Image (cartoon, rainbow, N blue to C red; front, side, top):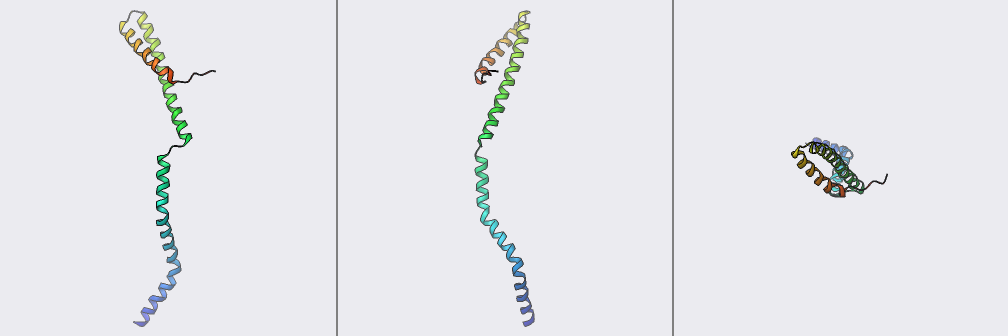
Length: 111
């Protein structure tokens, strides 16, 4: 009995340097976890200037694409309206109304 107790104590002391690193890293992980979680939450909650610029650029391109599509539709419906298609006149007017709504939201290009 005395020998097995001495052996157990010897093994515990021999394993201490190996296990202390595991315990220390576990303690460090537990201590730094709230900081990591908080910084991730702040990162997700805030938008950087470049992200905001990219979002504005995407929205502007979508409006420009929509304006181009509406202008093509307007011209197509205008031709049909001039040929006497009254339904095309209504579609032309609807396209023109939407063009007038979108046009002020797109910056003027001075090229």
